[in-house]
Figure 1 (cartoon, helix red, strand yellow):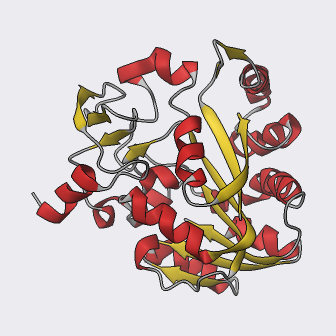
Figure 2 (cartoon, one colour):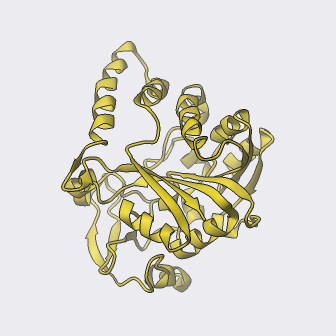
Figure 3 (tube, one colour):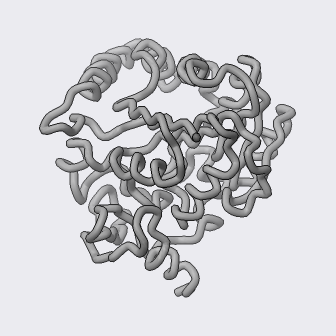
Length: 295
């Protein structure tokens, strides 16, 4: 095993000093059988050992041909734009212009929408395959891992990481760098699973977020603590998503193959409304979007 990668899981704690890791279980979602560890001090979860990023993010990953990936978003961009513009409308309550960085920008569809709303778009993308598509849109993209990207400090007004933070190793350095590249009063937007939510708690070893590419698993309270330590002041967690249900319903049409698929809207709406409910102080579902403003 690569010793330097073992050091990541052993030493790099983004909260207080060193995490104290112990085995939690082997996941049972599909047939991945991932070894999951948990920190005895803060409850942070991680997958280890795991494959290297270059072994995961191939062309097959970005075209929906792997069992742990999403569909090729170029095929559904017409529908995805409903969600992207809805998110940008919410972001505009905090920042309505400036330098906009999307980490894990894929083919650049979200950044294209940001440009249409008046932002100056920039991206980071680990895959040369998808980053070249984003570059062809006229977007400046750093190809490679986030920690290796030569990004200017105090430069970005908005940084978004949509279903990305869980993919990144060395979270201490990741959050330190996020703080450095944002301008004062800059906005950070993170979307990931909330492992404090009852959906994750109930599913446990079978939770669907245990995927080969997901290496660290967060909670709303852990994200808040991590960012507070790095000088982020105003923090807001949207349980579920940060935009109205209508946008989500319109986006879902991109995966429909017949009129019968409209029946799925019932379950989408039910999940959306359940995400706003809590039991024992924790949301019923386990999806979240976290906004934080840097001092």
